[in-house]
Length: 97
View 1 (cartoon, rainbow, N blue to C red):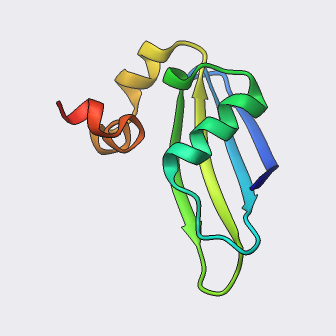
View 2: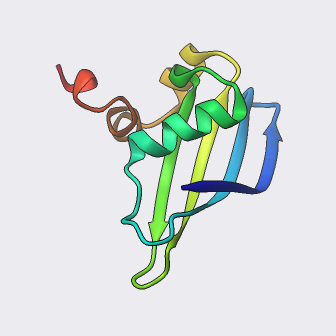
């Protein structure tokens, strides 16, 4: 799995970076949200709590997936600004308990 950042926008009003990325995954299934988050954390050197993957868009027959993600300067800002379903998707089973 290889991640390529297409567009990076610094949203100073909301204290976050907004990313548009392509994940290339030849000869394998679409990566999970957790796998994508782990790879982005390693690539961008940020904390996992401040990273929220908003969308994962894949197409049939193409081994490339478009990703939209947000990185907050403070993790508590992300908890305030992101929708509850986005927080649950990114936190996994731990958020439901």
